[in-house]
Image 1 (tube, rainbow, N blue to C red):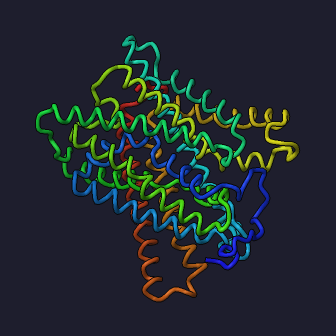
Image 2 (spheres, rainbow, N blue to C red):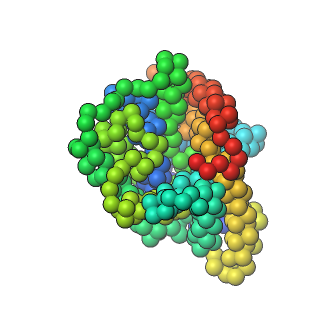
Image 3 (cartoon, helix red, strand yellow):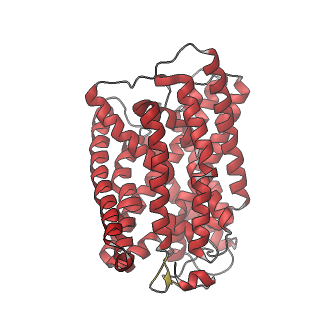
Amino acid sequence: MDAADEKGERPDLSEDTAHQISVDPWYQVGFVLITGVNSAYVLGYSGSVMVPLGWIAGTCGLLLAAAISMYANALLARLHEVGGKRHIRYRDLAGHIYGRKIYGLTWALQYVNLFMINTGFIILAGQALKATYALFRDDGALKLPYCIAISGFVCALFAFGIPYLSALRVWLGFSTLFSLIYIVIAFVLSLRDGMAAPARDYSIPGSHGIRIFTTIGAVADLVFAYNTGMLPEIQATIRPPVVKNMEKALWFQFTVGSLPLYAVTFMGYWAYGSSTSSYLLNNVKGPVWIKATANMSAFLQTVIALHIFASPMYEFLDTKYGSGRGGPFAFHNLVFRVVVRGGYLTVNTLVAAVLPFLGDFMSLTGALSTFPLTFVLANHMYLMVKGHKLSAIQKSWHWLNLIGFSGLAVAAAVAAIRLIMLDSTTYHFFADL
């Protein structure tokens, strides 16, 4: 840890920013991380992780992925202050260590990763809306592309009113509440269904060849579950000492913050076995109003979670093209957000509506960006900066991580391409899934 960080001093920033930084307590940043971990995606892990892996591999995988992710994120957090500067963006840190070309490559990888995650959130919100509608009417009139359009519009309204990541504040409380609502409902209804159901089948479906690819896909989902791909941007909002406080936030995320994920994932798989769907609320049985509450909570939480993952793009646009004058709610700044963020989310929404089976493509971009950003680059940057202080064993450990996750990224990319090729014969543009 740097001496400046220990003393709580504020070193120079890597570059100026139009957004507010260095003001949030560690627990607020912890809730930002927890909002991402316990997003409505947790309702899919019973089906996407546990079904392909089974009880033993799935449970060990979730715990091991948490430990490895905690370690990789802690490495990245310790690199926040390098060369006497705070590197408030991932690309700034990579550019400082490697040079301008890697700066551009890192920005491109991160942009594609976050764009796909944002688009996935809009699809997820649309699916929650459609599931709510289907509880009351079975006429099929409200199709998924319409729900996606509504979701994109609501996400845009939220983006207009929240100027930067630190401004979420009370909304993080609402996000936690919404997460608890759909997780508790899914947990309780799954428990009730499981207690009333006959013995379940927990065998891993598919032939040997298919299992290889589904296992690789499940491992990629394990990595996705815990990581944001934008840790330096989140760490930029935290108060000094930035490394010590960020480590507190990470411990908060990977201990208390991960318990709801484990609870709903294990309970869903216990209750429904290998028939667990990719959206747990489609499995559960219960009063319509309770299921509707869970789906609408998932919709609202997704709107807040998207804003977190869109914030690096908002920060780039506001810093590069904003006026830099007046407060965040000055009329000209508000109009700027409406035009620029509205345009960005319009593109997100259009892609989501055209490709509602985007999960296949997210697996590919995750292999090509999440793995490199979170594990490969983090370990190599740590070697570059701290290598002279590391023992031979420590260096070997980092190289093992670097090579291992590079190989896993390639394997995940191959599995994702195979899945895209298979599903391309089934789905079509603007599909009502």
